[in-house]
Image (cartoon, rainbow over all chains, first blue to last red; front, side):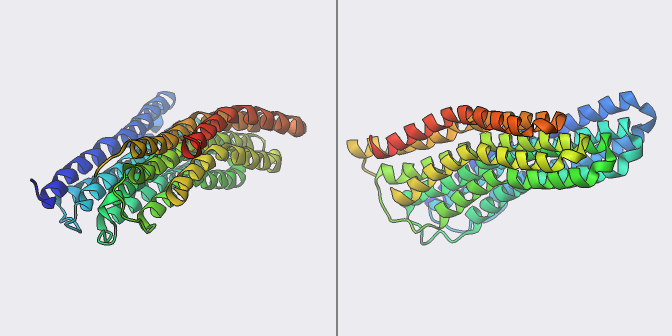
Length: 323
Length: 82
């Protein structure tokens, strides 16, 4: 029979592996996309290669953030003393790894898209490079919000007081919390990236509309965050709801089901919301006089797209609160 | 942890409800977003047809929603009926 410390350190290693393994996927894709687009832009305008390289590196540095967050959690899991010696701490190591690893996928892919678009935009319209650069910075930075939700849940799981959570079904609540935020933030990260990519392209094409375009981009990106917030809320609910001790399998698996429902349920609507606002932003930049109609249609379209994420949230709430 | 037959069935139907709604929401989410995105593009090209385009967008999204509603129905069946 192993003692709980052995369990905790073994699961910390699995958690660290999942954090960094999953967390590397998105940032690597985003960095590669930015580099590919930078190369493409240099072929249009080799004489600007110095500036384009600088822009690529700055964009990539922001894109890298998601992977660095995952690395931080992985290092904490590998080297820090666990906050508790209860067996639950081994589940919180796995939950923390899943939460940061999965949430880094969306932000990594997302932040790479505006960085790539900015390189191409600068090569095509060198006069507008200031505005393009600013929009890229704002867009890539907001794309990091989903991974920050994931990191908050990881830190919460790693450092919270586990003493008043019963082992059964507490293990499932912790695992479900990691899955809910981790999965739900994938969609928002990619969606935010699509929106800010079109904003960068639009401002490169038509810098006079930059104030309208940035405003619609910010509205679209903040509404696009909502599916990640649903996952985040379900995670907090799972962790902080007062759990009754129960050794039945049903009382455990319902909490994992809640995490999967709101987690997977957020991926599609998150990407969909990003597609809606990407097209809206694109056409605000091309036809600023239709900004009002476009914003209204965008918000109506986003509200309907949101509906399946809300179904996922409802099923999760039913599982946690009613059953 | 001792698992009885009814407990096992209930547990897996809870997990199934979560998976049905979670995975089932992915497709309609992307699809409805695409429909609304293209509607925005169409309104950008022809703002004077905004009424017709918004109506068509909402009808298209309602139909795209259907698979999401199937998932919700299956999830609710698993939760309340099975």
